[in-house]
Image (tube, rainbow, N blue to C red; front, side, top):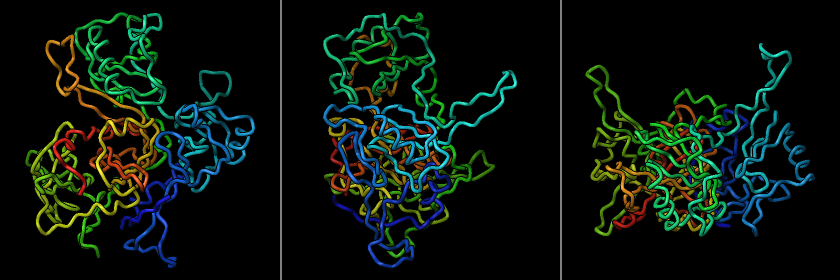
Length: 488
């Protein structure tokens, strides 16, 4: 397998954020290319995170020493561990319990390995502490809290679904652990739209989660189909999105992210005199009603070029809503450019760099080096479970795997049409996070490039938008690609 080269962050507090707790302490994928034992941040490192890489589920992390795989590559399906395999997991990780919550394996242990693998048996794995015993004042005996660090289950706030309502799509069934084709997504929307007012539609196997508008339309209990194209279907109704309403309880919350540590290194003063993906970018100071001067800081994306030869840096549009100027790392340091174009649906702003500023895509700290932009169809041809990496200026390295796809309307049509114009729906990919993205750490990662964690691919699937501490939503890049933008 090919190994690519990279350089670590100068800010060790951000790079080592995951080491605050043993339960998220996965190793650095970087190894030195020289014999010196000293850690020299400006040195070049080799990068390798995987012993085996698959297009979908089934990849094996370098620290995954399990002598088996819980992903059946032929059937394209998960399988439960045998008695011998369970015994191996309990023994190897001093486990007190194992939870199978496909596509995630959850291992409860008081003694997590160091470093931890992000897969066990080729399945994404969360290590969590055992539940703590407590005395319920209203009970006559001791009881046990279910682990508060288990991931959020797929729960909705309505009882509209019923398995007794006929499946309106009987001509085909959606494939397990695979994103539906665009034609299938459009068909589901067309079939459901006369029955309900849809705000957002999420395909996250084994569920379809339909988000309904908070309007005057009334739905009776158990009145909507509980299966669509053979897939269990749930309904959620809220002013927030379903993902925002989720209550994360993962191991990442064991990390104290209230400190708000960010990488404020001025990389223009480093030996390379060049910026790279993952550095801190800031908006111009904003006056808050005349009482304080504030600015927003996010993570730089990648440099693109269009057919006319224009070169632009991508940043999170949400971080520069009231500012055209872009600075690095703070507003007290260098101005690096000015926004020339905005793509709100993609949450992308394009920055024309000042002539004196150098920006290279050749290194991306501990994340995979970006090589090209990915069309949604190309990404969705593979099974879900494909691994990606991202390195934010407030989080350091995070791993993500593709979980599904989400469609929403930028603006609600009025009146709600019977025939939906599918082209007016915005598509976002849904990723599951592994790493310290909770608390205030999530505030600064927006805009970071999400890159296939494969040195032979390096495709950029999108730019980071956080829905909650576990789930990342990222708009597809098709419109940028259609306009001729490519990675420089």
